Length: 429
Image (cartoon, rainbow, N blue to C red; front, top):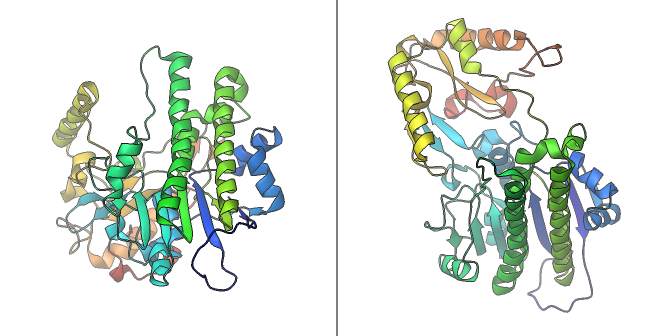
């Protein structure tokens, strides 16, 4: 979704002369926001400021990326290029040369970003918690990195000294997307989680005003990541099909969106006071989770993927110990070999899903590319076509008893992104 509004006013704020017809630009990112939630909120009078912006500006539906997920979509926004060009298709990246999974970062973005381009033109930029901005890179202005930042113990700002200033002014500043759970937490804990999200919205407004005035700006962006988190955790209380089942929690959720609307109103007022055009956008939509498909189990049953049973027992035991003793790895922590998660027996594996979210990323265990590849290069294309045909033919019955095809589409990356396979080994097969 997006909505744009020219918020010019008669403000006499002094700033250096900009190119003709160019106002300041304030961009507000609502991660995962969807009209399916926002329009009913506006119609109920819960989001009057957003409704005003929509009615007096320009709004519409944007096509997201493939896959339509946070890292791919925001990287596409920042570069103006598709995932096959900028290099980010997921939070994780599989390295076929080492069989390791690595978390993507700014170092993996292969194209120049809008922040670099504007800075090279002499324009000042401000970036506040936009995904795929960690580690922070130098910009002509300021930057506070996104939620993938491991924590406040690392460097997360440009200029570096801004970090200490933020932590002094906002001692509770955090990159956490937490949603606390505990036995018998009930409605009180649910409300506490929503209060944490509301405070994150307030923090975004405060950072925008404070850093914007401290550094000055021509283009400034702030992103509200926890809009997405809110919907992930509370969708059944927002979905019109199920919200009536728990009206108390549903009202708490709609109240959180009403608070977001007040924050959007404050940002709209700030944009107007600075003669700025306001642009509000999301990276992808949202919806219900009706089930999960374990594609690697299919590959195993079809004979493409072999499991090392001893290694599988070891990894499952380690996982349970981590769960029981809370010794979990930090967010976006150190890398592991893919076999740590999947317990793969490479000697009998021809194909596997290396990482998955709402999309699965399938790789061929290709001789000459992977350390223990067994698929001959001459068999590569035939195997891909064979897998595509089998995956598209899969059918299951949903809870309503209807026969459905869980894999709506299976793409070859060069057809999807227009790239050559020999130039992009990091892409799935």
